[in-house]
Image (cartoon, rainbow, N blue to C red; front, top):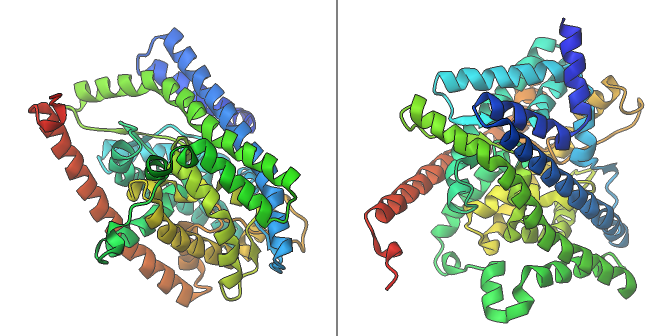
Length: 465
């Protein structure tokens, strides 16, 4: 029986997120009472959206990847272990013996936490359970203990659902994604750093008044501040830093212009597809739970529809390489994940309300911690790759996405105590940042409640003159 179930699950997983998510959305929608025709259309729209996202992300990888490699070579970077990124880390994770059990563990834990009212995040993004699975798979590869691996999945999943609750006010306030949250991946677990930095900047005179974003730039310089122009300037700039000639740099600029324009349109397809489910979920929750608010957990890719996030992602490609060089003892050459740094800083952009000036500080801290941890986890990821048969013995691999996760690092260190100093330092920093994140979330939630109450009482925001 289990073999049959696992075979079906693996078959669906192998088809990728663009098929897995529509299937899950269609089934969940019909279970919750959405009419079959609406559920089918919604599922297909989500599938279309993720195909579009995949095309754009692959385009960025194909175009920015070689530019990043050329930039590294041009500036003489001698880092020896190449970042395989999430495109490399996720297949290795799904190949682990932990993978199929991890899906059941993560889903069951979500249900239990919802019933016990320990979370309000309803995760329907089954594909991104690979992030939780990664922690368990690494722990199993390092310790050889299967139960510790399963515990790693459960711990990461529980933290993710709580992070989903934590970021819901930011999703609603800045990204205007009412009823939706992002509990997964680098976006969710690195954003607490941005909350701590935001608090610090707020207390620095003069600096706390600086607000720079693509929108304010557009107001001041017109067409030069529009997303299409910013994409071109950043893309061409990266090309020139890579040593490209004009005939190579300008096409890269045009490609990044296309990314800036097409990404929000693709994300809109996903949001349109989610609308029937989110509306039905709200209705059911109001009827069954007395209006208690729940959040639908989705892929962080939906945040790339914000032009500030895409801009920040492009801005951080050269600094990420510089950070990798400056970190003492680092061997990791950022590569595959350079094209998708937007995922790393997406929620941080929301924490700073689109202020790219503040994002420069938090993004620097985020990438520094990520690269340092990724360097520490080289032996672990390599062990997982060898265990799953994904790489040959004697090879070494690294990954910024998940390989640089503080959640994975802290859990495995608690199981092995290989680097007690690293455990204590990273643990202390992350714990402090989480406290600031809770504070930020509560403040944001109160501000939203005040705005809603003001609107209901016919406050000044509703006056039309």
